[in-house]
Length: 337
Image 1 (tube, rainbow, N blue to C red):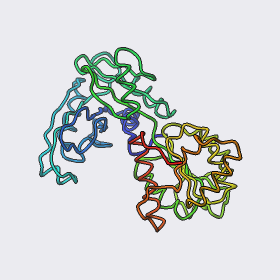
Image 2 (image 1 turned 30 degrees about the horizontal axis):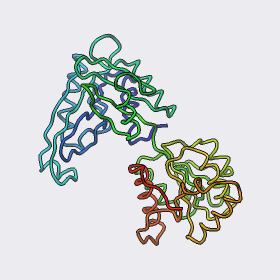
Image 3 (image 1 turned 90 degrees about the vertical axis):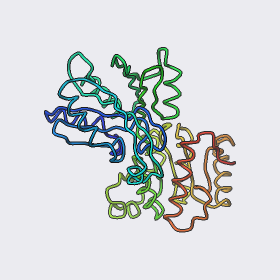
Image 4 (image 1 turned 135 degrees about the horizontal axis):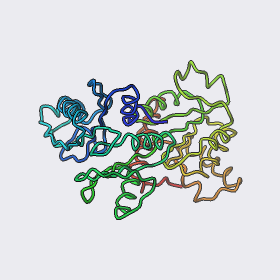
C-alpha cells in the first residue's frame, strides 16, 4: 500500500485509466527555503484536476498551465520559480527560495513523454513495497526504472536510497521511490490513540496489534487497521523492514516480550518499548534468559520516547514520534543499553 501523502504516481495513472490525459510535475532542485522537498510531485489531468503539490500553493497555477500544454504537445519541460518572501510567508515559511520543477506528460509512444508502461511498472513496484529508482536524463529524456543500484551512477543511487533523498547527478534526476514508512503498534492502550493519529499525519501506514478484543475495539480506533492475533505471529507476517518502526505499549510481558523478540529478528529501523527504567531492567533479564544478546537489547529504545518530560498520553505519543523521527533521519543515533 502507498500512503495518501505520496500516492501521486497512482493518481496520475488513475487519470489515464479514466480516459484523460495526464502529466507529472516533480521538484528536482531547490535553493533557500523551498516549500516542498526535492522529489515532491503533483499529478495533473487534462481536465485540470490535481493531486499533490510542488510548492504548497505558490506556483501550482503556473505548473498546471504548463502541464496542460505538455499533455497537448507531448514535450517535457523544466521550469524555474522564485518564491517571494510574501508567498513563502503565506505557506508557512520564514523566507523565500527557488525551485526547479520537471513537467512530464505521460504517453504511450516514442518521444519525450514518460511512457505509460514505465509508470505502470513503477506503481506496481510501489504497491509491492519494493524500492525503486527512476533515473531521468534531463537532456535527452531517456529513463531507467531500477530495482537496485547499477551502472555509472550506482554509488549515487545507493546513497540516495539510504538517505531517502532524490537528487540530480551528472545531468540525471535520481528519483527515489522507497516503500511507505510503517508503524506497528502492540497494545491498544490509551497512548496508542494519539500515537496512531500522529503517525498517520507523518505519512506512516499503521497497524495496531492486540489480541484483547475489548481493547482493540473498532470504536476506540475508528478507521485503523487492527489485528487481534498474538503479537509475535502478527509481526512475523508483517515482516518489518528498514522502513518499519515497532512500538510495544501493552505493558504486559506475555504480549510485549514475544513481540520484541520477533521485531529484533527483523530489519526494523526503530524498536521501542513502554515502561520505566526499572521495568525495562526486568524485561532485559527476561530477554537475556530467552537467549537474546546485549547487542540485540541495545536496539530497544526503552523507556520509549525522547525525554521531554511527557506526562499525558498525547505528550508521550509525541515523544515517541520524535524519537522515531530522530532514528529515521539520523541513523547514527543509538539507544543506550
